[in-house]
Length: 231
Image 1 (spheres, rainbow, N blue to C red):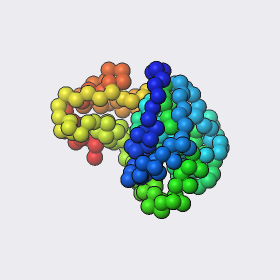
Image 2: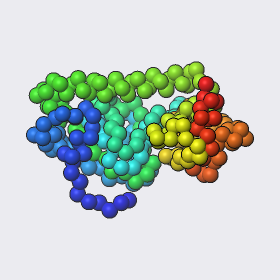
Image 3: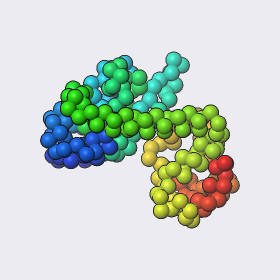
């Protein structure tokens, strides 16, 4: 794990979209209800059924949100990257967590307490609108995921995922390389595919010369050609 250095919690809170526009004294009050969590790779942050006493901001590292089926198989719901927050909706529902959270790499998180957020909501009703907007965006992404799982083939899902991982300045470039953020099994679960199906599709795309796979690095000789196979 990287060396621990003092962090500026108030400065980090300003990067959370739902706190945009808060005055320094408002951020200072929320910061007093915020604590750091240093977690090693593989640590469980919370289990399904645990009480939710706030939400998290990932400062660095990577987190998976998942649940385990009655058959014992794991389904990854979301992969959280640096700068993303999670748990806001469950916090407002005042219900236990419906998934578990596990670190995929050494991570630093902030836990923002429910009490601090609720106290600030009493002072500033505009904050409520910002939080609703943020959760609506998360819901919109979830609906896009459901549409993809229901209407798109496995091949379309993987191509769409690869295209979303591209930097914005390379959307029509040639000879682009991306590095998968985590192992293929977790990405397969996120796309609602088995690992075997995921691997077969990668082989198929390789045979079509649309990609070249080197471990977790994916080379795309022509983004335009890959995009043609997305529909």
